[in-house]
Length: 259
View 1 (cartoon, rainbow, N blue to C red):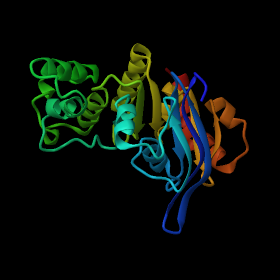
View 2: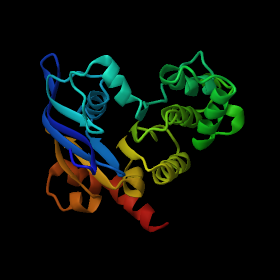
View 3: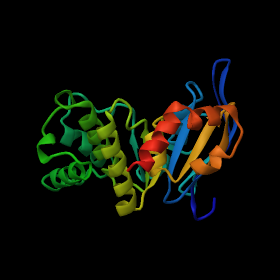
């Protein structure tokens, strides 16, 4: 892994029973970029992310994150690596019986149990503010929040340990266009201010055009192409052309030009 590569995946194979999801998948993620990951339904975008963060054990392949081999690590070793990244799962994946502030405090408790109130509460409040939520969101439960607010609360938790690397799984799904654009702007701002690398699974063409430095396309059980959208548009793969040159793709481009 070179100094400017933060994630390296080689020869990845994932399967569920006889259904092969990935077969020989390779991918590099560069330090400091927002990499969008796209693909049709069932191509294993989330499975790829879960493999990288250690929630899915692949049948074959090698994965390095932050210069460390991830497959086959002892739990204590893997834990030391995992604290260097944050994850926003689909729909936030918050603990329903905990307040927003308590959700943010969960990873801090796990990795830094010596941090106690009031410092713990101050850190949680700071992360909540970073996510764009109002201060009064802290004592609320997830059920009291809108869908967009739950995503921001999940983002606050993902930022709790000052990560170098951020994994986002469909962060704008279900949001209205204004809310999605605001979330994109937030991610771009955090990336710049915190010098983050962002692994972003999305189907939102507006997001891809607005904030992604490069896009990785999963098809045929592999990453078939990685590049800027302009570079991908030069390829003649039918799925790439249909996705980026279809009606929604053209609408995204028109909207970007109209800004």
